[in-house]
Length: 337
Image 1 (cartoon, rainbow, N blue to C red):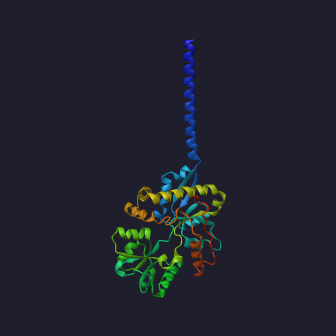
Image 2 (cartoon, rainbow, N blue to C red; image 1 turned 180 degrees about the vertical axis):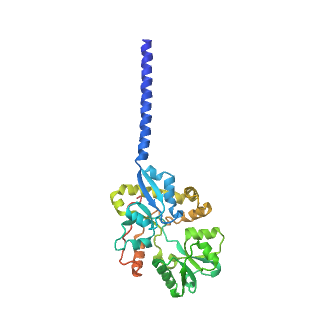
Image 3 (cartoon, rainbow, N blue to C red; image 1 turned 90 degrees about the horizontal axis):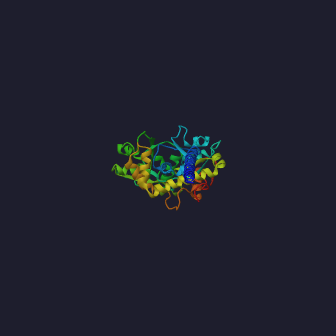
């Protein structure tokens, strides 16, 4: 009888051990299967990595994408640009700007892409100059030397702001922009003004203790408060994978919201991913953008239809695009509600 009890206990121990082993194997296989079954998404940048992109790097580092079953790869743009890679379907999402998107959507064969989120809510671009040039208003640009990329929309914006300020655009001297940073250009004395983005070049000038003036396009001409930069997606991908697209945007929005609340930590995450960046510059830029990513909005990423349409109406009036776009080309559908 005693032998029977011992044997029964032994059998129970063996059964429990076997069950634990099977459970362990099952859990391991489940983890492995989850890793194998993550849906691949390629996100292409429009430029070298910078604080415009931090939310995506945060979402990747914090596991926000993985938590929703996504494996996101961040890639550099090809020579043909981020929009062409997204349009081809080789990348599902990427970064673009509204002024370029207007051209891309009015080609003879329009690119099959749609803007799905605004990265920065307002246009922070403008002109930087050395303080001693005394260019603190667009009305003071006559006779000055402007370093230009020679883009049609760029020059139209320069003309519009100068005209609105009551001065003569034809008296602005435009020269090709040398391949160097904006701060070095204005310090050289050979160039008077350069087009820059406040979150990077103006912050850089502050850190370098450079005396400068900065004038913002949208302050002079409100219609120029367009969306730059923004996130675009491939149209076929959106149509065929709406739920996955929503998951991607949910994780991305969470990444930008984290960067808004934790700019210093977000800066470190970006520099950890891209070590060649300066931590001081990235941190200062993140602190600036923490107030700009969504500005007065309660949630990151949404577009204002009136602002979107007004800018494309302006592009059409300036003959920068061959047809009116109105409120087409964007959607708020995939953002977290």
